[in-house]
Length: 118
Image 1: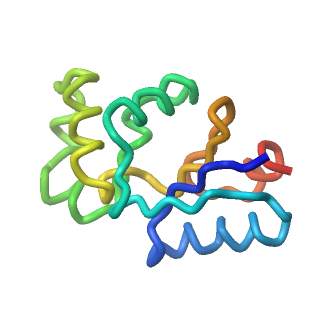
Image 2: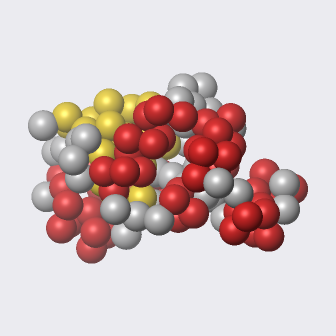
């Protein structure tokens, strides 16, 4: 099974996740979140398959998130507007995203990875 590993190389959380995947022998396709930002349609498909609220897909600790003042704006934005925003800039997306099309992990928590990808 090959999973999609959507990440940002300088992100320490992504590095930890990648090391874990390597150590467990999980095959993955490495996708650079900024150079190959997922399209609105891809994000929507990932979001719908995840069962996770859309606001969880935002990188709330990122500078871009703070610059845009999204903490206050997200609540009044439509789902469509939020998807557009996520697709407009890979740095707005929480990472890493690991998915096989059915299952998904968002961010890196070893217990979640063990449960989902082992």
